Amino acid sequence: MNFRRTLVGLAMAATALAFTQGAVAQSNYKAEYKMSLVLGPPTPWGMAGQIWADLVKERTQGRINIKLYPGVSLVQGDQTREFSSLRQGVIDMAVGSTINWSPQIKELNLFSLPFLMPDYAAVDALTQGEVGKRIFATVDRAGAVPLAWGENGFRELTNSKKPIKSPEDLKGMKIRVVGSPLFSDTFNALGANPTQMSWADAQPALSSGAVDGQENPMFLFTVLKMHTVGQKFVTTWGYVADPLIFVVNKDVWNSWSPADREIVRQAAIEAGKQEIALARKGLVEADKPLLKDVAGMGVTVTTLSPAERDAFVKATRPVYEKWKATIGADLVNQAEKDIAARKK
Image 1 (spheres, rainbow, N blue to C red):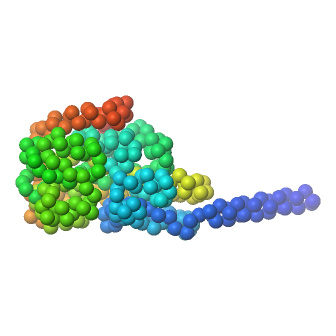
Image 2 (cartoon, rainbow, N blue to C red):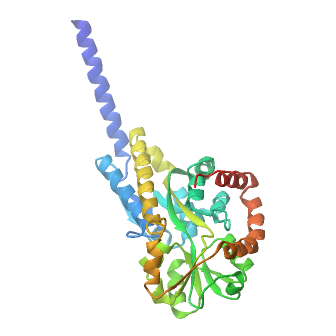
Image 3 (cartoon, rainbow, N blue to C red):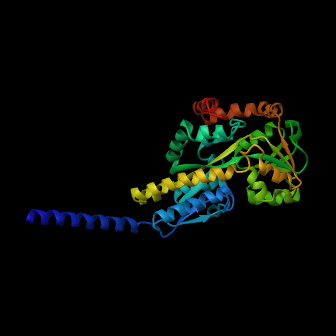
């Protein structure tokens, strides 16, 4: 009888200790966590953050509350400072662009190699395979915890002047590009005049005609009504894609219980899958309804033939080879191998 009482007493003590430890651990939780995004809802990128935040709040019974900060407002709109601020703890969580973080993590330039990925199957072969694992290990070493992949999509070319069917058509044209030297190199190789600027600065520049064109995923064309800022011509050339990565600051991650970490991870994976479907909507179907919507705005949509696209591939090949060495030939070779073996 005494033995049974001892067992009961030990069990109660263990329960009390676990409860106390849980309470102490939860007391380290912030009342609110800051998530950085470049774009907010209703864009697929913004929905990635919204879905993730909602799932986490629901599944942790409100222990982890996340507030979205679109427009990279936590770093005054400077997209290239986002990863550094995440690592330093200014930002708790983010769904970030591989392009924007490439100045801090050179391996992320892989996805911006011109014409590396010919289709969505190629993107999936990289993010869901060996390359994706190696990229995540690199991001982890750089100071953040990567959890899942999302997608901003293939970046297509728009301008206010004329249809673009060959590198010669781009000569002398002022094109807004993101703050990555690789993008400047690519457009210089095509004879254009690339101009680096944030998207906040790009919109008035396009409106005034100070800049002729830009490149971005097609869903943004309709969301931002780019035809109203002079973008009357679209060329779908799929020259680069921009995967997104769901990440958490390391100190924040370590402050959570193992159970909550797993909830956050699984919520990120689910949100990523939903977001990728949103990003590809209207573009994976045979009739590509999103392009029909754009054409319905009075915009001329040009789809390159294989021969026309090949001219752009050849013109940018020196840039590809130059950056292959910077990114790491071994990683690029693995990517090329996985793309060649992909299931179409």
